[in-house]
Length: 53
Image 1 (cartoon, helix red, strand yellow):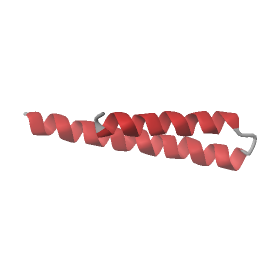
Image 2 (cartoon, rainbow, N blue to C red):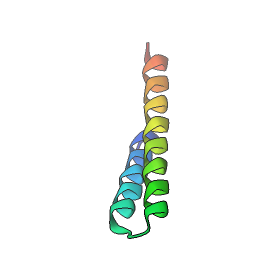
Image 3 (cartoon, one colour):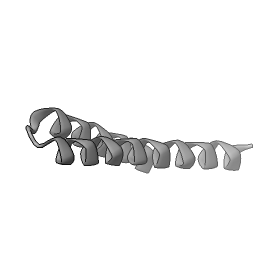
């Protein structure tokens, strides 16, 4: 599995945890973590595309 896909799966897992918890602070942290994972996956994908050119 390519690393950007694995990171996106981590983002999905963090988002699921955010919706499953009653703790608002923890939920917010998980949402932020999910956003960070997605941003990192986007960067990796762009770098990979750039290398192919």
